[in-house]
Length: 452
Image 1 (cartoon, one colour):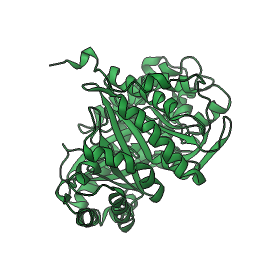
Image 2 (cartoon, helix red, strand yellow; image 1 turned 90 degrees about the vertical axis):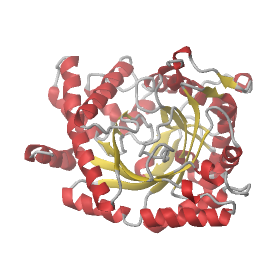
Image 3 (tube, one colour; image 1 turned 60 degrees about the horizontal axis):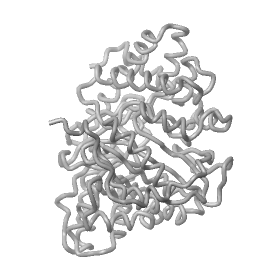
Image 4 (cartoon, helix red, strand yellow; image 1 turned 120 degrees about the horizontal axis):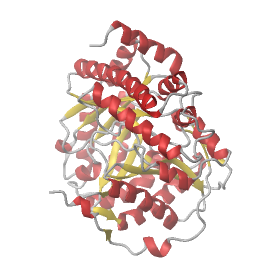
């Protein structure tokens, strides 16, 4: 249980340092919703989601009042739809996206994740049809999020899927051109995707998960930044220790909220994801934590080392606080959602190559990156290939959420609003990778995948 001192510290974090529960995410298995007829399968999906998640938003608001802690989003993740829709006789998977949208709207959640496929070793019929439907599905819906896992350390990299996703991302951007390619902000491609991730756009309910579960995502860049600033010029051991202690407190609070939500909803508690997820709000920035460590600007030499220390200390603090830390857990570096990252890009301290280096030691990958609208599908595929290779070789989760902003060029901005923020369009390498990504096949798994 939390002590009175810890509760008072948490209240101060909420009031002064932007601490919040970023999301309570209910995972729902749809494996019993399969049906040969698309209409009946979609009806079963809608009925099950609305039945189990009927009180999710109400419970989130109740807990927020009880503990005085903001709960920013209430979300749902479901079994990858490619696995459910594959049992139907239909060739068009848009009705499944529409069913998810209607269910999400009915229960009042912000997002629903799981319009997803796992293709790291190859495509099944359902995977092909789902991927084909992604652009139109994201253009038509507001709450539906999509993800595709196309690489694992054990399987290697499905380069056919990488190239296809380059094309899908381009098409998604074009279909949502009037909103600066917003559809791409709801689409992420993964290596080593976790089954219990509560964060969008990559959340889905894995096949190893229970029938229904509550996962919580906690965020606190502002809290960590304040702790680092208070520490002053101490050495790196002391710096890591203060971050660990801060992450410990934040994780304890997250698990308390998650277990209370699970109790009220009468479903199991799953995990707490202790990820430093920034927002556009002032002071709520991972980049500014790095700068508080002594770097003039995020992106300069030393940034990767600073981020490695931060990410590791957050994970250690979370692991000390709870036996149920999961999801991604660490530090996110989404450009559009972090005021410090945006400033660093504008001042030319941070570029795409440095961001890629930083993803070797952060929790996810190239996140909410805007690139010129005329960027080719082949170049996007090559960027994805580079990023998932980092995940495969290093046995970690990496991901890409990239927006080829229609009609935009380097130096322009895309505007999404809310937590998605605004992103400066970044420069990319002008040389072609087309002949490379068009080879097809699978990049083999690394030798250390043979661990048995």
